[in-house]
Amino acid sequence: MTRRLIVAITGASGVVYGIAALRLLRRLGTHETHLVLSPSAIRTLREETDVAREDVQALADVVHGFHDIGASIASGSFRVDGMLVAPCSAHTLGAIAASLGDNLILRAADVCLKERRRVVLLVRETPLHLGHIEAMAAVTRFGAIVMPPVPAFYVKPASIEEMVTQTAARALDVLGIDVPDLHRWPQ
Image (tube, rainbow, N blue to C red; front, side):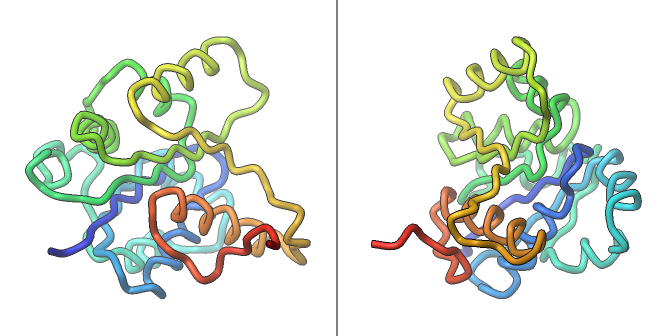
């Protein structure tokens, strides 16, 4: 059976996390990757990086349209190992918490949750108000894993890129994917 992972990139600051995850997955070669970029992610990509949308899409095996709720990943019968939303905007978090499915990112997350597959949300918002906290509690009750991209300083990162890669590798680790690039706490 083909191992598959959905990677969704939303419009929150930190599109580099999704890009780093796709790069790690490409290097590993263990999963067929299914990418969904929100329109806001495309705008944030332009504002935060020098990476072209086409270059991000080239990192994935399959690219799905944001509004294509008839895509393969919108069905529970299409097997995937899980989903990473990196970064996850407060809007996407709230919509997942409300079980909405009016775009492919939301529908795919909802399908993964109903099928009891892992969903990791790199929620990228600060400071938080009670609505954000309650949405995080709700998605956690539904089975999602909320993982704000907090840097691991114990690895003594020498650059922002190293911090981003460590966080992306840790998110993939939470999804059950062994990533050699992950620096673990010394034994």
